[in-house]
Image (cartoon, rainbow, N blue to C red; front, top):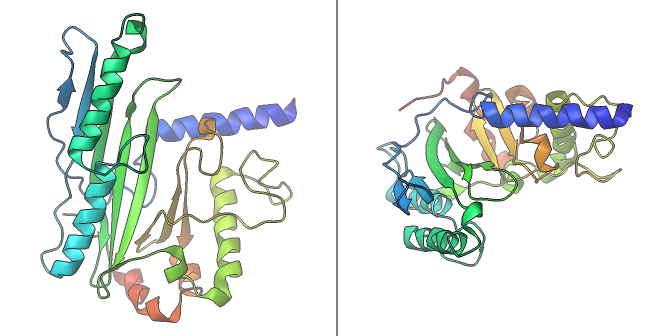
Length: 276
């Protein structure tokens, strides 16, 4: 019973996160792209309908190289217009709206009218942080399109301004320091989720096999405070746990960087986020 109650408490903490998304460290330092008027599928007055509000690429620094600007715009637009169910479909507005139209048509079939009410999907893109070396963005998607519950997801993207490359964890971390980095991530994960050292993450309900290192997604942003890593619902725990966000402090992060990228964070400690 004690173990069951512990899992319930962790689940409630996750639900509070879903209500307070955007207030955690690393988020909110940038300005999201202006939300357009939602496009409507169905009358909406009266219901049913689907409201789709898809933002645009935020204003980017004027001194970005043309090649990097094209890459950032391509990747952000792909995330904003990503299909809901199919990973094989193209990420375009027409494909996304066609998918929503199919859902609407299916939900308004005879005998299905109770499944479709006031559905919505909202996506936005925010410039989290920028300096002469690095650019981090946050793409946020939320809404309700039927089923047992709504959804809320964040995808972080980080680019090396000088090389024009979108960075991965493998790019950031020296191969010789990978094990140290994974321990740093687990320490901050346990801190964020209040899991004591004597309890395994698996026992606490997370998707981490005993004896194996914690998975580290390429869902990260670089800020003056450190490396922000975001786990969306289902990625490392059941949906009821909500999302988990951690920050690996900059001083610890510096020590595990690959030699090629140490210059990226050399001045971050004295650099404030730039809000556009």
